[in-house]
Figure 1 (cartoon, rainbow, N blue to C red):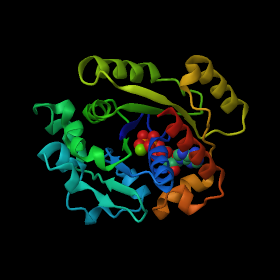
Figure 2 (cartoon, protein in one colour):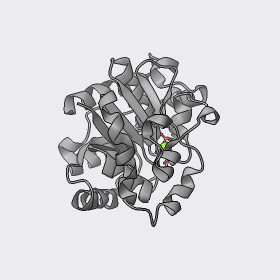
Figure 3 (tube, rainbow, N blue to C red):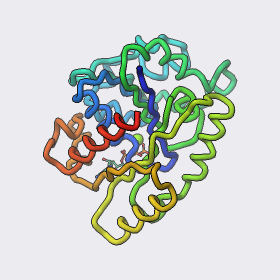
Length: 252
Ligand code: ATP
Ligand code: MG
């Protein structure tokens, strides 16, 4: 059975794309059939798996705005079992163009529906906002993974995000679950340790055991278009994302 998982947080730069790209790659390496959907106009996820977006005939924009069948926007990556629906800058316009559209919150769900059977996991990399794109993502998803950066304001905005999950459950997608919260960019400092304790204190079991460390290889890998397990398998970042992938499989 396929599982559609949105990676979300409206805060910018908290490790959403790094988590989406690397979870997708780790699960693909574990012989799962994986689709990564880039739902951010920045296109970082597309870049992270080394796909040249200029070669794409169709993108997530076409699927959302023009009703192009989702399958037409799927591209292979260089990696076995891992495919991508790319995004480009024009996705910025989608938020506005869809305002008066029919079923505007369901556009992504509709686009992915015929694709679900072909994949074990579909990961959606969300943009840093709670706009219509993220609403589409939460409406299309079975579950959401929230990334929190281990810094002082980690929990800031979390209430708003959780309220959005409740709203989406009430209006568009009653079955939406929260797979878990993953802490990212951990450093061996008192502050990082305190944030981990705080977040675990607030959210308990909802927090993944695996904490992603701050790791230079993780920040270098995207510029080579490689997920961390291909760029530097021995790095602490690669080991952490493999552990997180195992937890995601276990949490189902
Ligand atoms: P945005 O909100 O802009 O989409 P994001 O939440 O997707 O950002 P990322 O792009 O994954 O966040 O990460 C932000 C920056 O931090 C990137 O430059 C990324 O390479 C770097 N980064 C992410 N996680 C780590 C890590 N564990 N160690 C080192 N650098 C990291
Ligand atoms: Mg991102």
